Image (tube, rainbow, N blue to C red; front, side, top):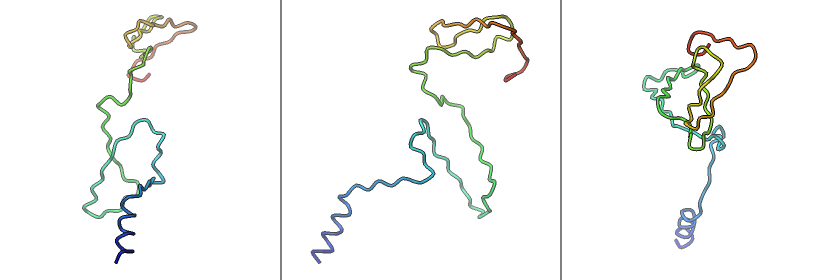
Length: 100
């Protein structure tokens, strides 16, 4: 009985580190995603909507943020608040639309 008690206590004292093989610990930002498969359907090519409405990056040390959203001209405004505005040089061409 003493051996069994000692083994059980030993198991709870030792810290165990377990890493899921697909989990990349170098990722800076992670968020859990829960999938409820209550219908028991096959999950091959299963689409998951992901809503990225919150801040997903840390801009604490950001000193330059150029959005290139002016639409015309040769300058682009620095949105970081530090005033590091950029001057566009060369053959400048603006396109319409959110991403060109």
